[in-house]
Image 1 (cartoon, helix red, strand yellow):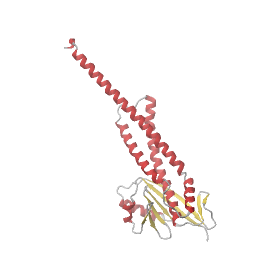
Image 2: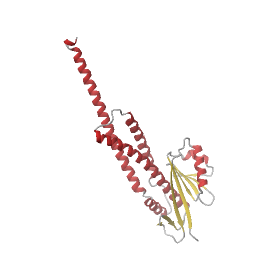
Image 3: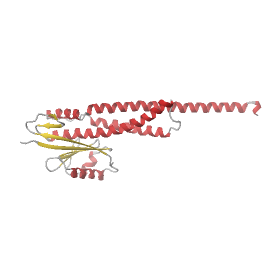
Image 4: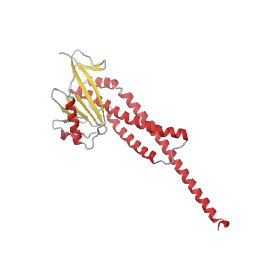
Length: 260
């Protein structure tokens, strides 16, 4: 048997995907707790994951776009902003499981192995999307912290900052709620080679370190937000105390005999 080359591709979106809402749009789809699988001609397939990613195995680009277009019909206000990832898998009986020259080599590519390859590539694409979100949030947070460092306080007009704080808290909650979906699935794999494949691909895409870096940035953002909120609250309390003192002084002045 000669070597076969398989092409995997993944697209990550902003929205999470409810698999039960999508299964009706694809009559031949099969749903598991992990993904929605749509078999295609030629032995390939499309995988839809709940964390907002679609992966394909040996599926032409036009067919992949048809699936995405069908999802857009089902999911209202589906975003146009996407992250794409591609990967090559080489299959030959003499190959040992491992990554050589940036491609995964397998002695055989079963359905279970194809699923875990698709899952890992989809996780990498989703991780990149959330990395971009957190990086943008990190930069905006740093701008407020820099002002605090240079002036020792936050702007007196805090509406823009409060709006950003609300957006940042919402985004942080969303990211944290999705990150657990990118952990190793709890599914039991009968093929011992699948664990090796999953570990090799996670190392290839550096998912473990990227996950840790993302959590570290989120923690830093949280600490900065807590600091900004505290400074803004203290400044508002100071302004309130000054207003109270001024009112008391004004009342004292009004009560003086010479003022009457």
